[in-house]
Length: 301
Image (cartoon, rainbow, N blue to C red):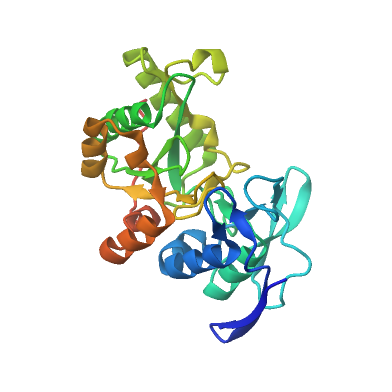
């Protein structure tokens, strides 16, 4: 068993099983996972800060069993920040990944994917953003999601709302509308997102559905408005995904999404770990405004 003691921000961490191949079809070990998160830390940490983390752990790699962990592990170091939140099953203590040392500790648990709610732990009923989760049904793909995302962007602009797109790291896209206003509620954001999804369904019935039933999604993109809920989480921007290859949930500028849509190559919409690090180093965090931009939902839908 490979083991190493490292120092992160003055904290000593014991890292284990560094040679374990967590992406066996690709050859990406736990050491590679830890190095990716270390290099992307400055960009991902602001999006994790003060949010109740749900760990998705793959102790034996992406081809074996995984489990979700909402409660912060009891064997955590004393310096890991936590918060008390209320879930359906009652109150629980959750991890807050607010610094590099906690991020590295979490990744040493083989939590390849990091999932967070749309609200901070201190204000769990106040969403910071509206999200439109674009999920392709059978016989549709990520290029269809890109088309719908561009239509959605234009509709939101008519309502004076800026939006930001990111890949899911798998087969879909996510469009975020930042709010960052204290009066926002999940009841409002869910109602708004459902209304927008139904408008697009009426106007683009050949490609869009707002219905959850799988038979309604064939050859269409399902706009999953139900993600706007205090009990739901989304994959965090810059998180790895547990696929055959270490892809990343990554932001795309609208102009780039337009170009990629015209190129008709779905593979170009899958961002790998190395490209993510390189692009962040060159362009910074393209999702930064999601954390700071203040916008107000219209009430005429």
